[in-house]
Length: 282
Image (cartoon, rainbow, N blue to C red; front, side, top):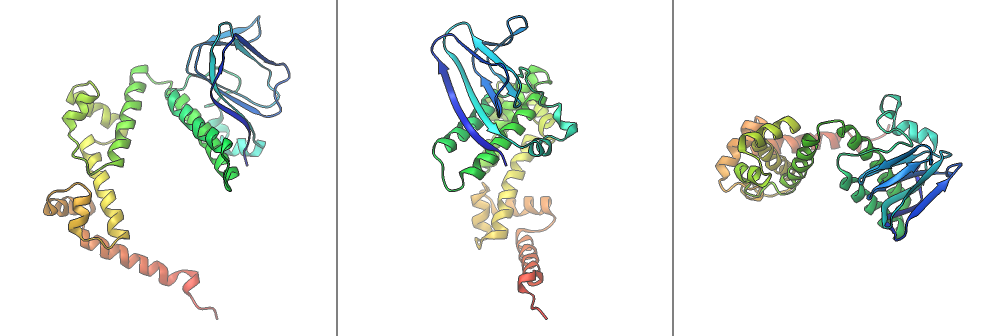
């Protein structure tokens, strides 16, 4: 289990600063640096730009600072047993997150947002804070590795991927909204054809198909878990015409909404009847 020892979000040093730990810390240290800074020894010093991340393992020498005022970062000290580190990053994935080296993730704000949640939980603990902090730290490290891998792609592609990922999240969060592809393309500042090309390149399907999928996945959930009428579900998922919803659902799923509901309920009853808790013991 990962234990968070200390952490800070959006921390500032009002004066020029220098942090030195010759023999390293006894725990892990992750820095998300939001200003330019320097790392390393005076003879081998690396100047870094804003939006940099660096991870130090226990015992690794730590030396960094900023010659001018207002150094700004997020920081995290945590303890993690070696087996947990090896389980989190097997040999074939460990190279994705080199230690002690400045790294430039493609979406730095995503990592800082994770750190904010982690720090808030650390400062306002609840009954499950230990488990929550363990999960948040794992998510942060995996997200860092993922964003470092993305950073190897062309800068323009990274920018578009981040923007379209946020757009895709909006679509799945609000599938009933009357999304228009032309409006979405204009909002991203690209032509309709380029928007469609990028969307399919990143997500493997067209934006229009994703909108339909978002609506029908929501419909499937309500058909499986609620007693709402098909008409009500169609309206909830953004369909003004129930017949259009039924046709699109059948084309997608191979059965009508009513047949899907019957099939789901039948499967649920079968699982319930064969579960160990419902079987009598001899």
